[in-house]
Amino acid sequence: MRRSRILLGGVVIAGFFSILVVVYLRQYASSENTVWTERAAAAQAELQTSFWDERRGLFNNASPCLLQLCTSPFHYWWQAHALDTLIDGYERTGESIFKDRIAAMYQGILDRNAGVFPNDYYDDMEWMALAWLRAFEATGEERYKAAALILWEDIQTGWNESMGGGIAWRKEQPDYKNTPANAPAVILAARLYRNFGDKADLEWAQKLYDWQKDKLVDPRIGLVWDGINRQGDGRIDTDWIFTYGQGVYIGAGLELYGATGEKAYRQDAVRTAEYVREKLVSPATGMLPSEGGDDGGLFKGILVRYLGELILENPKEHRMLTKLLVTNGNSLWEYGKGEQKALFSNSWAQTPDEVVQMSTQLSAVMLLEQLARLEHNDVPGLDDK
Image 1 (cartoon, rainbow, N blue to C red):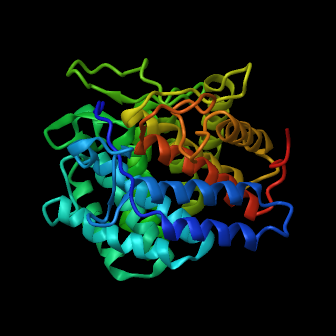
Image 2 (tube, one colour):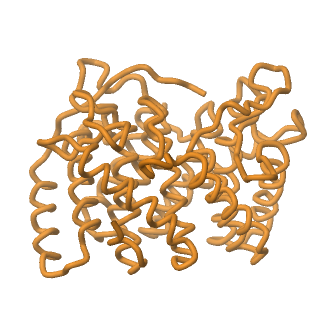
């Protein structure tokens, strides 16, 4: 797993989004149950104001910018999640500014990635394909569907029989297989099947899921390990336990349950979610762990995205998961947010650093957007203390 060590950033166009937040909050001022919607709007506005680079059509890597490091290196997979977060904003508000920035990112990524969407990392391409597929679902624009399919075609070439199957992490290391390159591919293939009805995609989803579950999931407790054969010794990285690995496996099980109706997939997702709640959350504070900056700054955001999906599948059953998100959201807003701006910390329980990485900001926005989505769907327990 890459561990980027560069702090980057940007201070960019603020006016429109400042106005948008004011209008949005006034629009909902008469409602008593919009606290999470209002917080998501403020966090999204800060993401756009402090990180968006209009000239490049991409988000900067941190705020404030630090010289040339503002744009280099190119964190392809961070941009994929930034795109996903724009779609969250568009689905919540219907505001054209989000749709326009999704379109700008389409060209911005092509311009920065040598005119193509594929790259050398299969997990990167999966995140990007998932985002473009969501963009197609949200807007109906065929070019986003085409981008997702181009990436999916390349992703399938990552499967090989080393370690009994699975998609490799990267093209230069075909015998290293991990959760980030397989569980998101399950989600992608199942969603492609849901959208377009090609049974070959469903078969891919099931094949990938079977490999993931067999090789990288503890069958007793649902713990998801990160990878196998990273150092060429066939060993499973049982000590690499990250929140996002649990999240994408939960998402994979949910998508296959939706595609097939087979309850075993749902049971797998619930088991892993219970592992998260019982073992990864602090028993004293109810908080998810801080996994540092750089790539680690994104991990919790990916987890909460799929916890949100699981909660919406059956809100009454998953009230404890709702409480988990509420606890983390309240702490983020009270302790993990800057005093002057809605910029956030890697730890959702302490003041942010002077320079906030885009990965960290994205996780915070994802959490607040998920809570706003639950609020929109009247999920019980959002006002629990």
